[in-house]
Length: 159
Ligand code: SF4
Image: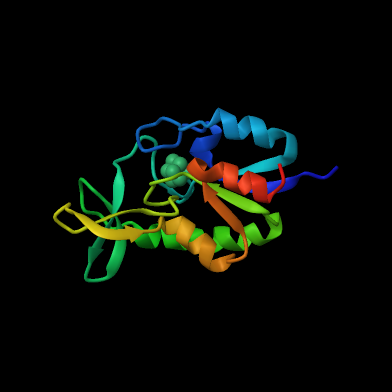
């Protein structure tokens, strides 16, 4: 039987792609999905050209709206990720993904994430990871979840 395809944040699959050079491998998800699905890893930060390890980034509000900023240097890396994402989102069409599992809290992958002001103060504003937001906009019908609410999506997919 042909397996469905599911996109997943690469660090959840065990790729050591996080800013600190570590992974966030989720063995429970991998074990359960291995039987039913082909998992397709995505890492917006690494695929758009950032190093491993790298300085951490966060979402900050400023004159140009909410932007992706390297915390230590203040570098605005939003455009770099947007340019990469435009192509990657087009390629995704061919993959025909049934669902996407995102890494929670990430400023790139989280379905929700913390937003800060330019002085580094947490705002009572909830953002969406930059890449996750673009995926949801382009594929509004796609089932999406974070690893923390995976059981819910597994039920919808009848696993
Ligand atoms: S950008 Fe996403 S996939 Fe890459 S390390 Fe961060 S959370 Fe994981």
